[in-house]
Length: 611
Image (cartoon, rainbow, N blue to C red; front, side):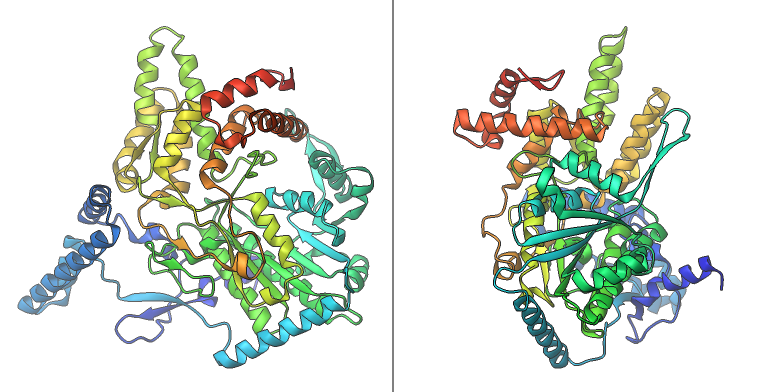
């Protein structure tokens, strides 16, 4: 078998998921196409289905009672099933019955999916094994003394989350050393694309620390070594491996692909293969002679629970979602969690699973170290669109053209009732570092999420106040099937292909998260198990600071140089501290107009220097 064929076999969803017959309850031995596991494969297949989803959304807005609307849809579906069944009986033809179901738009699948069990052990034996792992971790931690000096190996240090881990670790007295696994970086001329130089892991690490603001004595805590998460044992050389086996107490694996539009193969390599390699690496450390290893921290996502139509996503449970997954990121992170369970229960690896929700910038400043993904993407897109439209208005006939484009471009596919679970990066990393000395977290899934979710109608309101953009919410079902094809056609004819592509990408990535019936992630283990403060960050305030940061610091993603972003974020943090001292209030609590006045008095926003 060639390498690519071997990868396809190992990456098959059938290794993690079984297709079960709804009639017999037995597994249907047929290969599973990854696309079958996404919601896109099971919706918008029938005009009546599209109409029903649209009407349900409207009824929820009118009545405010999602449960009643969902129950009504189930009853209508059941009535359609009975009608199709009777038609089949009258004609004596199953083909007629199936045809009637398709015409009516009845959802009646002949099969369902379920996750395979990680082990055939009894629940009692699984619990007993976890208790032993916790006891072993406590003993390993106690052996480090009353003030244990921890030595952490980190993957994903160059990412948004990884950089925050480095920043907080710098001032964490428990942590004596952080060894980060990163690849060399090839630097190319932006115009000719010729290779200018190759940065070694050490070179990249020094640049990274400088941008984060870690220097002098504090920088001695950090070391950067060559490696690759997609290779066995993280691609670390034998010499480094031998040294790490004798020193590392913890592994934090947070390297991942967070692109919601990646292919299945790309997502699987980054999220599942990477997780397996990190777990195998930690298991090797744990089993090494004279090992000082305590535990492995696996960073996953609370969205491994998929689409649950507002049913509670429990921290302890992982079941295949009845309403499937939004994208391959969610799906492959669920598979990675299953690999983690396997390594813990079967192989005896001491491991903690932490599941952040949608991570955004710092709760006080909005600083995100240049990240432009996930929630930053639509904020930046709408901000740039407004700037382009404002510029267009100054041209001949520009006013009418700008108005026409705005009417179709300034739309966001989401129900007003849809809620996003946004959590700030500082809270997530507080949880990650807290887990290092919490052996009782082994065997737990901990949602690093919030209990004060933000509705899309609040998002639109804040964007209007802070960015001056007047975005309209549009029904996601109608948007996918009618509005988006029409909008993109109009924009391309108006010579706005980039804006058309941006809206297509926006609809693809966020369409699922804007629909009614979003999952509610249970929280509690972050406080009960990790000991974090009960009061979680104010999501509305955090989103307001995200908008302010992206507009003024990032200039909606146009400022790309990492050194310049780092400089601006330091200036920004100092300016906010001054505003808070002078006003006696948190900057996020200030109304948009007052904040603009105060920040304008402190900073020259063109040079982004203090006045």
